[in-house]
Image (cartoon, rainbow, N blue to C red):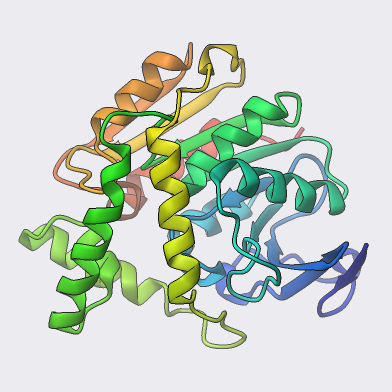
Length: 293
């Protein structure tokens, strides 16, 4: 294992702005994983699991920064995406194996998880296979393996990419937000926040990588459910009430499957409900994650 990046984390000032977090890399076997970390070091880190087609530049700083003020945060590019090398995982389970490989390579035996959309699917497979690794679990805009209509995300994604292309918009404006006045305004603000980082930006995902991820989600949606009753981690589930990508009902399904979990549904919002209502959600998730030890 070898690491790269700008200097030694132990001797750097604490960075709590995601826009300023340095790019780092770690080589594991034949794969180089790209990641960014920020916040105070020490204790249990919060590892962020990103959504379909996303790179390091797709995390909303209004969610990351409040967490990083008190916690060590790690975000990473999956294999074959952004600055990470290798081939994109053809299944969600394999993507979870890759995440485990990265986490252990960075020397962490216990983590908290913040996940969104496809990242939440990967996080579920990770915690089912490695239950002792995860202390606290945040699942947003996602659903369980085998969940009803989960496989329809493929059709919705392609349709909204077409709509965005025709209107010269970012596809996330259609996929994540409702098309009413409030939703359009929230979408524009969200996309603008993603541009706050102006240097060392990541490479966009390739079309072939996107297709591979979509097939993995489709297979996840059509396969037999995982036994989530075995999960004992405190779990926070959140979504909007009109999620077109991963139907909002699946958040309720997750809540029923994971005993003792908390569920938050934001009215008048969609797949990106946590981003539309970041001012309300961020304090809740900071409180839920708590201290690092």
